[in-house]
Length: 272
Length: 339
Image (cartoon, rainbow over all chains, first blue to last red; front, top):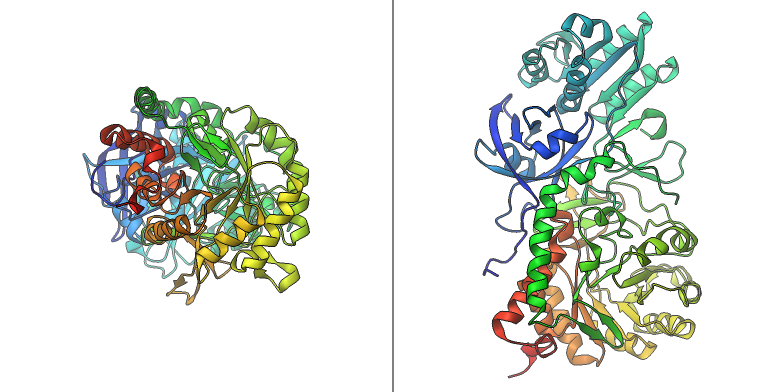
């Protein structure tokens, strides 16, 4: 035992192989983690921490998988620096190691034919990128266009990172900015509203800030099209034990755990 | 609460936990090796534990989730998530937030209730091969008695831990554990209903912790565990609202360790009972502080969220310390008071 005040040993650490800054505060990290890449599915998350030198940051951070490459044994995370925890994580560069616990949580159910609509707001586009890659994985890009449409929104052009990352994977996306500096001027949910009545959509997936998810519910709720939401909540254990990351059930009968019952929910299950 | 079917993808858990298993094996081997020369058994007023390292109530559920990550049989014991007579949905979110060297939580005693615990959790816990301490909480003194009576006589329960940090609905919601009289009354009500070893978990949110310790002793406690979380609060300066849905929340983590060590030290001097020390333990070194202050066992809590293997790291760390110093565990308990 050393003389340091704490000894928060790592979980299982994996090496960062690349890092790119996407916007002023968003970075994409690729990590060599073969065991995790082998079993992860889009919609799941990994509980991350930088190997601790002291007691801070104290908790791990749940971060969605933005890319999963079982062949290369790599996974990708898009991390927005919003506080000390995410700053430490998104600041990790090649050769640094991250403690990873995961994959955790329930993945997106894969679409069963028809056309899938994927709508992401801000960093909420990250898990949808993993899903889009998985849907595209078994078809040509031509076939992809017929089977899914990915929509990404950001506040302004300089915060819009998802279309570029999608293009690198051969995926095309429609995008919007609140201030009209790129793509459709307005909200990403405007694009959903325009697309949905065309009648081909069989499933909607959404991840983003709460007001966006509430808009998705207003638009999609009555349409009969099933829709799935990936939710974010303050989290402690990440494995379902501590009941810290609760989300109210739609029926008012208690709470669901975002870490274990989610983070992907059938939208009808949860109150918004 | 009925248990849901396993999450899709969780069937593959064995694969991603493989690197973790290597760490578990290394720690288990080290603990096994050191156990040949170091006796880790501890006896707390009749409650015999194979190791002095428990997992703290509320941080480990009923063991299932973490049971997938580490061998529970290596634990000194599990203090379960608290059990109440009726199911409880818990408090409105957000329920947790990070703080300097720690965290705040206000879960609100979410649990499936006594019947579901006995039906669905206890049989599973019993099969895991570690001592099971059932943490109980009530809103009236009668409820505490009823819980003890219903839990008495079930196989596989090593002790009851009485959570007195609950609002007393018969006294305007004042927490039982801040009143020596109410604490004594709760312990007496429980004592009357069971011959199981009784642990009283003390709240630190009091003026004089020794008054509460003596009241619990008077009421018939065999063991005291301390400390529960310190009452705290955080405000989001952007939204200008409390972060936690319930406004106030319990502070845990390394930030509270010096307070906890001080209280164990004081209580050691004030009562004859065996003590379980907890509050911010992350390592064997941290645990030894509590043991030297007078605790015969320790519990690891929120550090598990950071690293689920912390209880094993702490166990190995204690064994290393005892091996290095030649002290017996029994001799180390309270050793900081002498000389």
